[in-house]
Image (cartoon, rainbow, N blue to C red; front, side, top):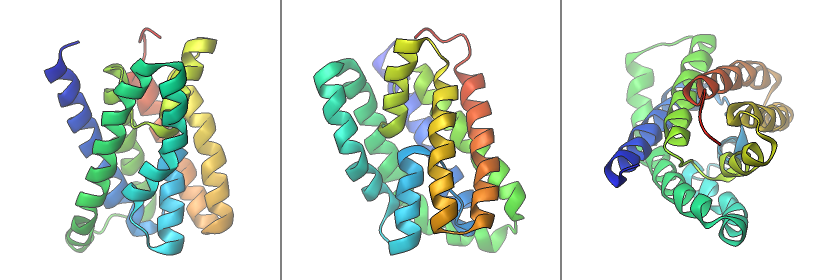
Length: 195
């Protein structure tokens, strides 16, 4: 795959991911799964920038990638850094979006899941990722020959369950809808992908 195509996939995927998070999840304190979900939980509880938290939480997984599979390290590093910065850069624009569009919370959870799932799927098709648990899911999908979207879905269920305990039961319910759509869209984008 050409460098230009891979860079385009990282940029497009990261922007879609950031739009899904900032414009659809953050206004209702909804969660995605994986490291992004953990980053959002910490953001909601402490006010820390989510992108910065995502980078910090991803570091141990990148150490494993460096040791066991340098291709995953290099391919995931760019996606993780760009998507984390995109999340923090686009965050201030969510106020304008909320003022202009009054999207109901359930619709917001669906649209957020679609944007995030397609963004992740685009990056995974280009053999890159947002790092974090997506990177770990790539390892596991290669070992067990299971679609990477399904593995990500399992991780996501765990993370939003934690968020439901820490944030609110409504956040858990709506975040469940979000990760369902993330999983479906990621799986559709990565269908017939070589592992």
